[in-house]
Length: 250
Image (cartoon, rainbow, N blue to C red; front, side):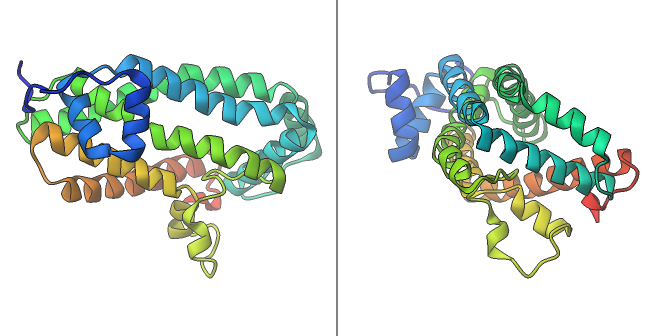
């Protein structure tokens, strides 16, 4: 075994025990995850839960309209102009199939997203910082960090449905902490794309990586927050430039 973590001295935790443990006892649970990495089951459950939470409300008319409104607002922000009547008609027609597209899209994109982030973590800690954790161990840490995101999706879906409003960061996004900011400013955009469950997920990731690589969880957490901010700003800037220099990156 090439990992930096010790061999477990306790019986291995089952799938649902690990789900519950991430929420109630993240330190002990992530130590177990590092010692006995099993990423597939937890990744599948999180993908299914998030996909259903995002897709099922769109089967209702209010949910479909809320998602359509969010898509229109996002498009207008990137384009820097109102959508045309023709564009709205196309978006409205597609929204009737949005629930299916959302659920399938999450199931397809989620593991790809997880693998990409795992690769970044693995390269950063093994190649740059000289660690010896295996890719499977890092994938297991990353996969278990999605438990808060799944929980947030389950809690947030009915709230957004009752509010008839869907936002990128969900009902618990940090944008409400700074209402005085210009909504399209970089800081306001970053806050609106970040919610309390995102922060919680970073905490879980930091705890897991700290257990694997014997480093301070706080330092890892700070690095994750900085990387998140850079990534969000880069994505919005690139997409904004692609759509003709919309205000997204300003």
